[in-house]
Amino acid sequence: ELSKAYYSLAYAFTNVDDAKKEDEKARDRINEIKKGYYFTGREFGLRALKTNDRFGRATESGANYQAAVELVDADYADALQWTASNWGRWGELMGVTKVAMDIPKFKAIVERARKLNASTNFGGPHRFLGAYYLKIPKFAGQNPKRARSHFLKSIEIAPGFLENRLLYAEYYATYADD
Image (cartoon, rainbow, N blue to C red; front, side):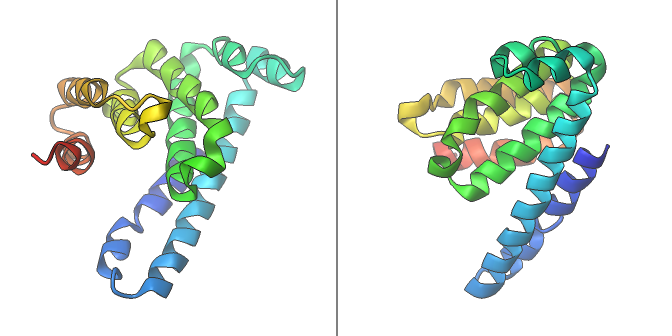
């Protein structure tokens, strides 16, 4: 729940960011605040995941991270989703080159959330993957068709959840110039 709360705090600054576009110092300060909230949300999410004994032991022993994520069970689908969401948003603000080593980790986390419960957070794993497949560089696997498919799946899962449609418009429709 703390991971979700920190995501919400950071996300609340979205409209503030839009209102301050002309003021570069204010925008930079807001982005620093958002980075802090997303990073903290990621950390609380990882703490929650480590309460899963199998995942906790695997990561503490230095096991392959993607393999360790596969040990997490369905009771942790929300924690997986919020951890990945915070990590992804933090990475987006930091820039791909600074978080390149983290990409396989947060992608594995959200893929596990999708496998365990694709409807968690109103189709959150699909919404995340929609943004992911548009935001990563082409050399790293950018795939607009997959992005669109994931966004549409999130809308299918929760048609009344506005964020699914909003992010589809913000990411995909902007990309496709639609």
